[in-house]
Length: 421
Ligand code: AMP
Ligand code: GLY
Image 1 (cartoon, rainbow, N blue to C red):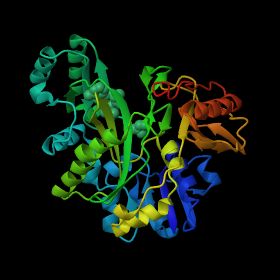
Image 2: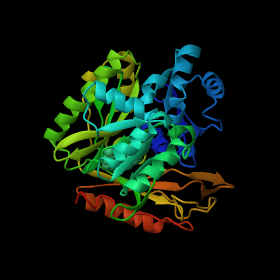
Image 3: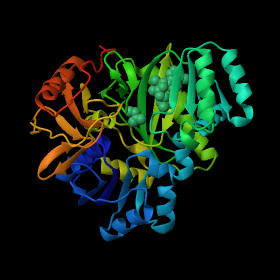
Image 4: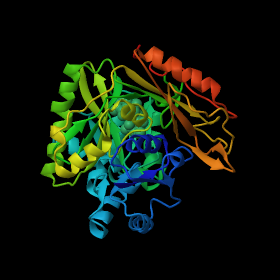
């Protein structure tokens, strides 16, 4: 099989690492990739939002599987484009309609309401019912959760304690604070609980449940400070026991798939359920139409199945027949970030001591090669994944590595998994 992975982060490096282990993987390409993916496959310098360009390289390299890492090309309709232009290629990623689960919060909320999927109560607000939005805030108690409807690079969710400030922010959002993404805003009831991430690979009917994970989004220790793309992750998640998982299947996964079928929405790819456990009951915080980052950097290292076997089963609608084998113990990942991130930061810092470590896996996120050296090229730079009998053991291992690898401004959270121990 010739495979092309779209994206350039730690998630895509983890996919490349996993797929390259399959005996059926012939040629592996990553566009645009990073300094880590270039050690496993061939990086292609193309704009992944330019589907004609993607089609050109798919034809040139005889690509049979196109795995779409990030959400933007999916929300823009890359899967529909290939269905029309090159249907022989298996695209891992949903249709444009399916990607609305992530691309529009208002769509996702309305979908969950129709199919009785547990989620926070909400009100959809546009310029036409702004007054109703203010009243909703006046008549409820904080914290107030405001979500931009569209994609806003992970920044579109505001959680505000004071009603007056919430109303100001609501107005600012409707007036374009996040551009067209916030012309519609979802006001949500605040849910108090502990979050976790569930991933399935699905053909829209059958699914394989991948290892459960939890990510750590805040920049500061003990979950303080601003949100980031993700500072670390742990898999499995001890509080997600059989009973909770059973509720996730019955109340969330199955109704989501029935809803997609009911609406005749094509969906072949991953669904990432961002969930919250409120007193033993799972609620959906958000859907994503792709895998998570950095969750993928712990989920794939724990998956013992050949990922290409799963993609084949997806094609053949056989996913229900495949037992998912998981590595026992814990995998944790710790993300090294650039100084200043998630605010402004500098790029191009040389990374030293980036040798092979037997005990751990190093996934590159924002890195590139520059005259034979590896330099930083993003906010999140490297994800260091380690294994252990306990979360503490695994984290200890990543910490050693985090101390050895160096670049100017290096920052990381030392407390990944703190709330699970
Ligand atoms: P989202 O982009 O929808 O995942 O939201 C980003 C983060 O905001 C989530 O990971 C949660 O930590 C938080 N959040 C979103 N919605 C809610 C809610 N209804 N109640 C509490 N926290 C929320
Ligand atoms: N780690 C959360 C995400 O990928 O959206």
